Image (cartoon, rainbow, N blue to C red; front, side, top):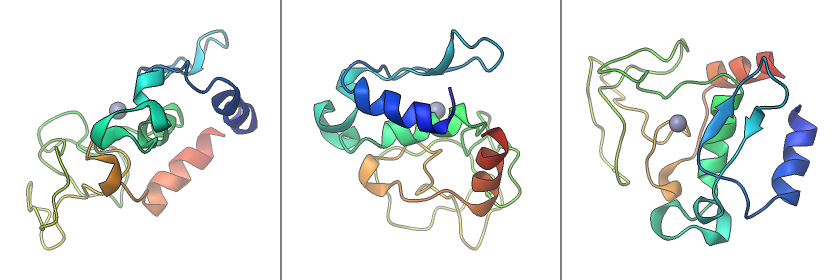
Amino acid sequence: MGYPELSQYLGMQHGKICRICFCSRGDIQKDGIVISYNSFGVNAAGVYGMGKTAVHEVGHWLGLRHIWGDAYCGDDGVDDTPRQASYTIGCPTDIRVTCGNAPYGDMYMNFMDVTNDGCLKMFTHGQKERMRGFI
Ligand SMILES: [Zn+2]
């Protein structure tokens, strides 16, 4: 499923998508994203109700890892994202320095963190290039 088909799929299947990302690029029958209806758009409750879970999962589908690299001070394989200790909960507003990433600190506003939807705002240029490489 390419990007145009994915966009159409997300629009047509609104409410039937689950929060789990299937990134089976080798098997076209399993290639895509499934997000639970209660984790998407207006159906989602609370701090994840803005649909950004779908943006995060599309990021995975297009080759991105979590910004913390799924390990303490891990590496997501993108040159312009800082290492950070772990995922971020809530919606911080301060600079959080971990893993030697001063002076800017953790990039908790990145779609590949798990911060509240209202705080997720960006992909880096490196992440965009990686995603474009998968299309
Ligand atoms: Zn994820």
